[in-house]
Amino acid sequence: MLATRDADGRILVVADTCVVVNFILAERLDLLTQHLDYRFVITEQTREEVEVPEELQKVEATPGILLKAILNGTLSTGDAGAIKARLERHRFVMSFNNFAELVQMDGPQHEPTK
Image (cartoon, rainbow, N blue to C red):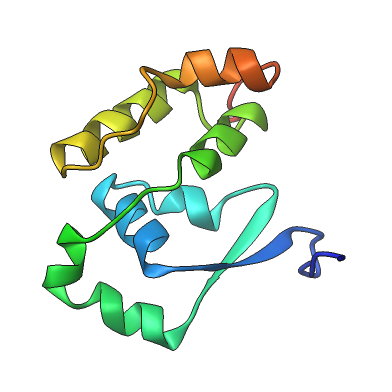
């Protein structure tokens, strides 16, 4: 199955409420808008759900998005660790100690571009 791509070549991804809310909680929604590999789109239903405060307590994050951002040089492991810590303060605990150990398993890290 071929992935649908945006005009700039990025893969189109429909982001669900969980993903959007977690990046809002981490104060890094910019990672979704500036991602080099994916173009995230949000449905009207997700927009409505994000506006409901109770939804903030029912979220799951997507560590894979952060890992991909590290691997393509958009995010450092330190910055990803800060996001992980912020999410943990909002009761989302990831099942690994740090992103550096994931990078070692998945491939080389690029330096983030400024």
